[in-house]
Length: 141
Image (cartoon, rainbow, N blue to C red; front, side):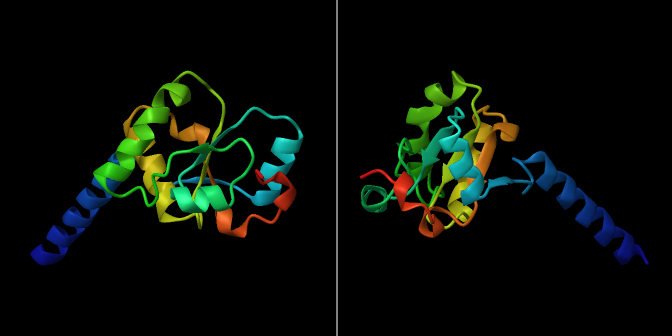
């Protein structure tokens, strides 16, 4: 019985610790269609692209800010985001994080930006990432 109580206490403690760190896995998403509509409607957005340089040069959405921070895991990757912090801090516009597949790189970026003081409720992940972007007319040439 004591082992069971101990296990429950440990699991609850771990859950509370995870909730206190970062966004706790609650990420907001923008579908490609929603982003297309927002861009065509002239909405003010920050498109924060973390693709590596070669992928960014190959294909990126017009107006995206390159950071080359993918996969946003190492200190070196995350330090690449520091150069855009002043722009993010001086705006209240929604931030759409664009990574190759809309997964771990984007969540790592958001977690880091939240740690730096950027409000989590301003940040979104482009669902399925740049690799699934179906609107070539909105890509930079």
